[in-house]
Amino acid sequence: MTNFSLFILPILFLILIIFIGMVFLKSISKHMRLNQRPLKIFIAFYTTVLIIAPIIYLVLPKTEVTILTDKMQQKLSLENQLLYNALFENKATEFDEKFLVYEWSREIKEKEIFLKMMNPEEGSQVGIIVQQSDALSNQITGKLYRKNYLVEEIHLRNFDSVNINIVDILNEPLITWEDATTLVVKKPPNKKLSFVLVSDATDIIAFNNNEDSRENEAAVKIKEWEYAGPYYLLITVPKNVKVWSDEGLRIYK
Image (cartoon, rainbow, N blue to C red; front, top):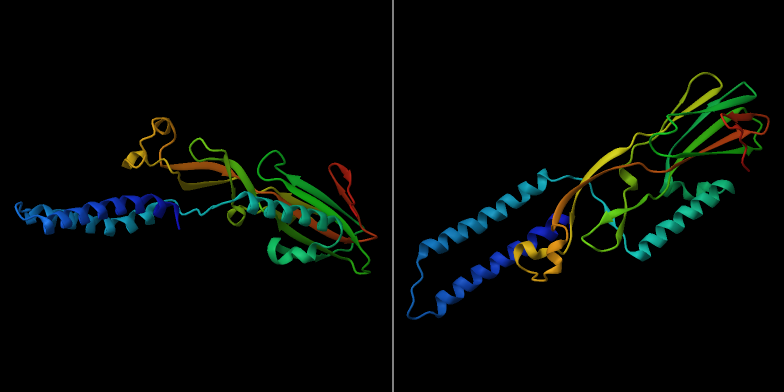
């Protein structure tokens, strides 16, 4: 069920109860006659709400986020840890189906390559892991992985932070070859997301009379943040090829 549904359904339910109440009073009343015009106006209003509701939904921000339970958060965090371990144990292929974004290969004649990180102070972090291959060819392969990205900056009213997973809608790093020996990794720019949060602060439609709750956030509020997600770039090179970066020689086994 979408956030918009969670907001609009209580309102429609309240209107329906009022409508049923009016019909019931009309049916049991023997001495009071209800004017048909107010009833027709009410029916027209209710029908209009039903028609307009989908239109309002279409113009709302389309970003979908998954609010996580503690159990799901632990599951996704464990998957991240398993991926991290696999990257350093030459077992990352087991996680290709879930985490692999894309892969590439390149034939080189040189015996060394250089890694260059662009805009290192901006955008998402990209962890570069280099492993050696026993292959006799001069082929270099690269595999870009993106782990589950959990965010803890969202608050529903005065409750604790709510974790969300937005891994499928992030920008990707740009990986290019500047020349025959220089591999350039440009961090992806942050991506601004807009979405609707719905809390149980239903005071605005008179479902909640708790005085304290009136100090909380409104029931529906559009939130905007800039998000970036962590990536891993796994580079596999033959044993006779050295890999250099701005930080010096980086060979991880």
